[in-house]
Image (cartoon, rainbow, N blue to C red; front, top):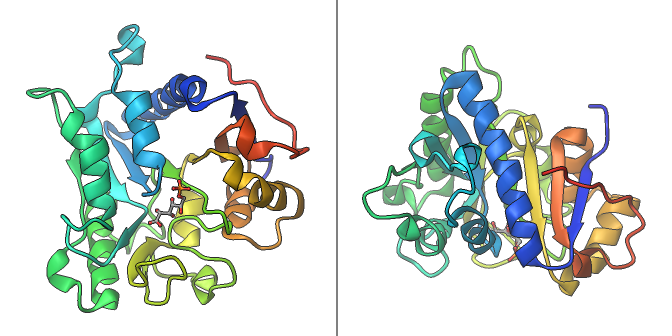
Length: 261
Ligand SMILES: O=C(O)[C@H](O)[C@@H](O)[C@H](O)[C@H](O)COP(=O)(O)O
C-alpha cells in the first residue's frame, strides 16, 4: 500500500486531544469536499471519552468547526446487546459524546444495530452490512465501502474493532460486516467491520493511551506478528495514524512524527 503508519505521541491526553481534533477536521473537510458528507465509524473502549474531549470544545476559528450535521456515524464494532445495555458501544458513544452535543445544534446521523435481531448474530451482521450498502451505494457497484475515517482503539492483546489475534475472522475477504460469537473479550457476541473494510478507509486513526499498552505497542510496531492492529498498519500504510500518549509507547523505537497543526 506504500508508506508506513504515522505515530504521533503526546505527554498526556490533554495534549493529544486538540491534535486529534485537528486531524479529524482535516478528514471532515476532505469528506465534505469529496461527497458533501463525512462518513465515520467509531469503536468503543476509551475512545468515545477522548473524542468528547477533542470535539466538544468550542471552535477556535471558522476552520475548526465540527460540522455535526454532515456526520454519518457507524459503529466499527458493536456488542449484541440492547442499545441501553451497559456493554453497548452505542450507549457509550451516546453518554460520552452524543448527549453532550449542544442542545438545538445540528445533530449527526447515527446508525445503531437493529436490536430486533440480537438472537441471530449472522442476521445482525447482515442487516448492519445492508445499512452500509444503503449509505455507500449498491454492492454491485461498490466492492467495499470507503469510510472517510475510522476511529479505532487498540486492545492490550492487539485487537481492534472485534478482530482478535489469531481469529478466523481475520481471513474474511467478502463480508463487510461479520458476526463473532466467541470474542475473548466479553461480551462474546458481537458484530464487526471486517479487515478489508478497515484497511480500505480513506483514513484510519488509532487512539491508544496508558502504560498498559506499551508491550503490545512494541509488538505491533516492531514485530507485527500478524496482530490485528499490525495488519491494519500494513494494509492502510501511511493512511493510518496513531495518536498515543508517551506512556503507551515507552520503549518503542518506531519513529514518531510531528503533527503540523
Ligand atoms: O467493543 C470493543 O471491545 C471496543 O470497540 C474495542 O475494540 C476497543 O476499542 C479496544 O478494546 C480498546 O479499548 P480501550 O481504548 O478501552 O483500551
